[in-house]
Image (cartoon, rainbow, N blue to C red; front, side):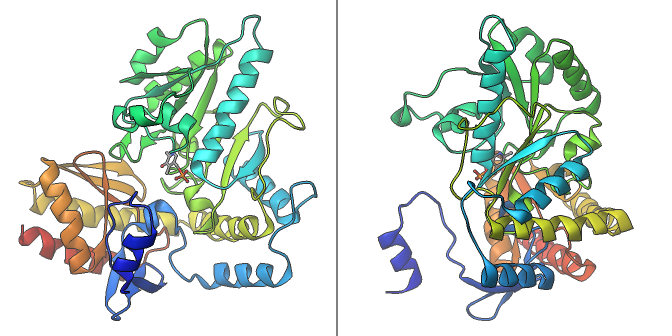
Length: 394
Ligand SMILES: *Cc1c(COP(=O)(O)O)cnc(C)c1O
């Protein structure tokens, strides 16, 4: 059986898959089985922050695998403690962490913390979480319900848990807060929803209001976190201090890991939450290398420089194709080009793959870019040259 037939026969058809068979990668370049190269402007949806086959990550994973991959969370796990210290210190917040295996799981943890806080900190239990329309918080029954997109709330999966409501703008949150509301959960730059950043002053005002009322601000940094926007957290760029932050995608450089960090360090007690795999030796060792490499890139100014280089190419492309694109969106290396219509979006993404550059969709009409944070100038140039060919052929 060829690969496509095998895949279709034995995998549940949950994805509208592309059948390019990538067999290896180096930096931000991927190779398929025929040896064709592709510029990776997607990082597997914002995951491969160091690109492919980064020597330090490969070395750390191999070394760890040769010693110990996993022991349960009933024992202390040395790299887990070090990674917790690392991400708390990079965040600049006084927080403690819980490790999970994915973004959805990290958000589940955040919601559990919020609900228990809502019971223990108020006379009458508060449990409702307000989220925003076009948000994306995960695919579990609870996080999909937290996701403010009706298309994900298919009746076949009902009943859903109670306690979520959606508003369309930050300004609408104030009126939506009732005496059962415990938290607001937001992405500072909506990723899946269309690479849409919120206004800094509006977010700061919201954070201040919630703090003054003893309500929680949960920032879902599953996509924006770990330097995707240029700072360790988008919350750092926005100069806010959230109550709870969740991380996942970029944190392990491709090894599955999720994390929830909170300043409310004693809400969860022994027995309240757990994970078999969460924060094991392999994933936290990977997280340690990813954060070490990226924090030094950020400190040296190399990341800022790369962001500026990418942005210049993006703006040039936008300028030459103002008939197709309305505007550029996003921050750092989490970027998008908003198309006038969704047909253009789909054909750009498909043709780009054929032309040797991997880009993503976001929302209904945004072409999304999430390149590895270490992408080279040459790879950026080649990727944009290939996109230019695609656009010229539309
Ligand atoms: C991807 C994503 C998630 C879900 O992460 P999974 O690892 O797929 O569970 C949650 N929130 C945001 C903002 C994301 O981008």
